Image (cartoon, rainbow, N blue to C red; front, side):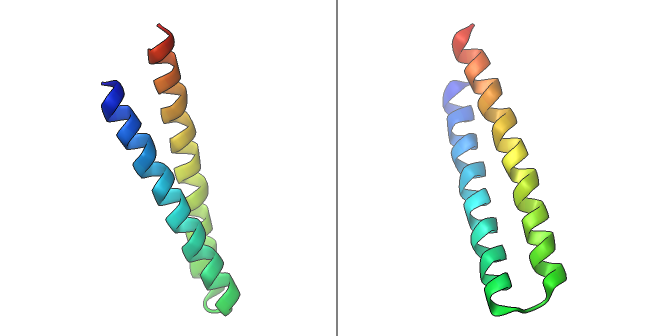
Length: 63
């Protein structure tokens, strides 16, 4: 279970990095601002999910 959560946390963190890069590139190119905004919203949601997974992993490791 711990290994699965470790892998899942890593994948979610990579997704956050990808969304951040895509959003920043969109902002720098000054393309569609709605698309960049949507990418940043997804980034925030993914960060929240990553935090929840990390808290779950830490609670499992503690107990």
